[in-house]
Length: 319
Image (cartoon, rainbow, N blue to C red; front, side, top):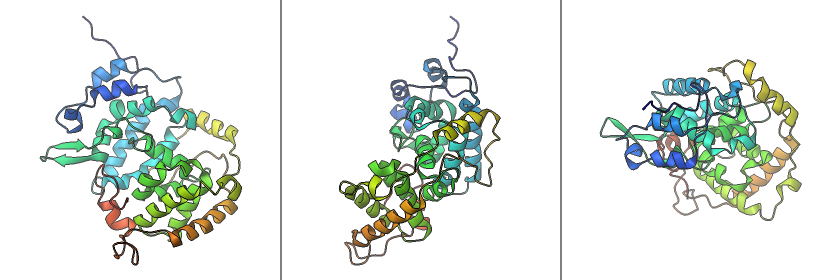
C-alpha cells in the first residue's frame, strides 16, 4: 500500500483541528520521551484557504530559527518581545481569521514544534525537554505559544507602530494577566497600560497584576467607550496591508517592521485612562508592597520576574 500523502503542500501553513492535535499530545510527547508524529499529522491536516504568500510556512520557520539563535544564551522568555511584532508582520490576517485555532495548532505541531519545546520546555535528565502544558501547543489564544504573541502584537500596537507591543511583551505579567481580561481588546486601555510601563508609573509585576484585575473589575461600572472612546480603525488600509504580503520584504531582525497603517490610538483617550489607572493603582492592594500584606518590596520586572519564568510556569507574582 502506498503511503498517504499530505494534503498540505510543502512550505504552506495548513490547518490542524483541535481533536487531531490533542490526540498526539500524549504524556510521552509532552514529557519529551516521544517524538511528535509528524507524518501522521500531515495526513490529517488540511490546506490553507488560498494560495496567498501570507500562508508561507518557511517565513515563520525562519523567524523561529532566528529567535532561538538570537536568544540561545538568554532566557527563552526574552524572545517574546522580538518575535511578537515580526510574527504579526509576517502572518498578516484579520482578527476574525486569527481566532481559528486550527491555524495555530498547525504552526505549533507541524511547522515549529521544536520552538514550542525550546520556549516552554524545561530540561529533564539532561537530554529532553518537558513542556508542562498541552495548551502551549493546542489551547486558548492567550496561552498557545504562537497565538499569544500574534494577539499581543495586534492588541498593543499603535497603528503601524509596534513599539508599544514590544514593550508589553518584555513583561511576562502583562502577557500572562492582561491578555486574560475582557478589556484586553480595547485599544486605549492596552495603550494606557504600556504608557504606564514606559513612564515607570508601574515598575513591578505585582503592580501590573493588581492594576489589571482592579481595572477589569471597575469596568463593570465604568464604560470605556464613554470614558475614553477609541477612534475607528481603517479596515481598508488593513486589507491593503494584508494583500501586500506577497510583495513585502522579510521582517528585519534588528529594527521593528511597520504594521498596518490603519489608524493610531486616540492620545486623549490614552491620557484619560492613564490618569484613571493611576488612581486605581493608588488604592490597589499590591501583594508584597510595604504596608500591604507581606510588607516586602516587590521584585523589579526586568530582573527576577522574567528570569523566574524559564519555561511554562505562570508568573510567580500572580495572586
